[in-house]
Length: 627
Image 1 (cartoon, rainbow, N blue to C red):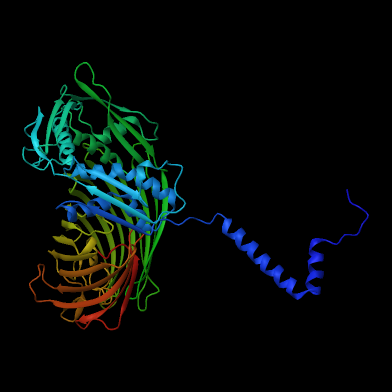
Image 2 (image 1 turned 180 degrees about the vertical axis):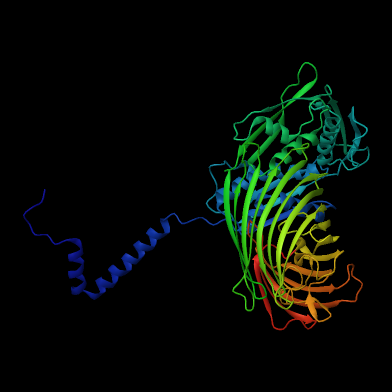
């Protein structure tokens, strides 16, 4: 309730006092500053945590152990990351007891004593929800004790065809990882022989601390030997169940093999129709020692389309696009239509166009064989000729193993060719029947960005020009190798050898696209596109043989950026098999790579270093490594 008296507010009274007495004003300012300071000190600022982390290992193995213990420690990770909130430090310290002991067990130390103190207080004694407001010093002290060796080391029964780890033997260091690997190897050895439900039935592990010995006895229950039973599809899919079983190719009635189970899953993944694939064994076998296999798949969206572009100063702009159906008739068939326009906007170049369609049906003659059919229309306007062509072909590919595949087919093509190098630009019609075959060995660790391994592809295509009676063949070899060096394998040395040729008809009578050139992004960077050819008595055409050599040194600068130095050389000759009578040219340059989920983005700048086919620099931009 307000009174009728006019009492000035506290602030008004302060202002009046300040005007009346300067000393009082100064006193008020000092009091206010002190009050604000006190309030600020009581605010809940984020607490800072430990300034240092010390590891002390007692014993002769301290240098070896410290690196492995630090790798296992969350405290060490917090120190490196700079995340030092007290509650996080306390949680990490209390969890590190088990992590450090486990790391010691893995190396054979079973009498270890681990102490972790936070400002002198044992971390294990601090209540989890009562973390100190501040932690300055964290100390980890480990007394590993003696390193144990195996006293007894027994596992039985074992499949003698499946070797056990060499370290599981009396007198060897008693590492916990060796015990675990031995148990797993014993189980997998029996599973590989068809005993799908093999397991460790009993284990006795005794640590004799006085003698620093670890006695281990593992008893394996191998169970019955199974044969593959029914294959059940346990999920809904737009792909027919019969086709899923056919593609998986589980050998019903044969002895169980875990490799066959994984191969079945890999075949289903390879179709590209499914987003996820899981192939598992039934929990229990049947009364006649058969074991059912369960397949669970999740479909991808059936349709997809995409676009691409590539730019180089020698080959101008290339634009491409595709449309894909992953399950055309309900049997995981793939149908892809792709169009491409190249040499767009290049000086002195005329555009080329290509439209192709490809149909693939997996598991037609067994689970590892795929049928394909292709057709296409193309228009190539080159300096020497104009080629208007229709093609159609069918064939099969077969995977002989995870790394080796083969291909065989029959192809028909009809070309209307205008020879621009002859007076009057005469036109000729070629009808060609050919039998393309190929073998591929692919041992690369990554197809998009390989760092290790080998790639080899060999092609041979006998052909007959039906309307002229000429016949011959063409061949090609493509060999690529990769090797990583340095810290974290950040340096990759890559090399490539290409050899190709055509035998049979003379160059003037051969299909123009069978002739060979050098220069450009696929052969010699730094040289103009298809700039190296052959002089046939005053008429320049593509050669009948080709050799290409390429080397690259790729260096990772960061996780996503790399630099590349490269050198390429190319040879073209008039002979069917390279004999050195032709001409060489070469180019070299530098590039940048930017890693993306679909492969590195490539930017290369190159110039000629040998030969007289080009001058100035060439620029290449695309997706994926050059090879």
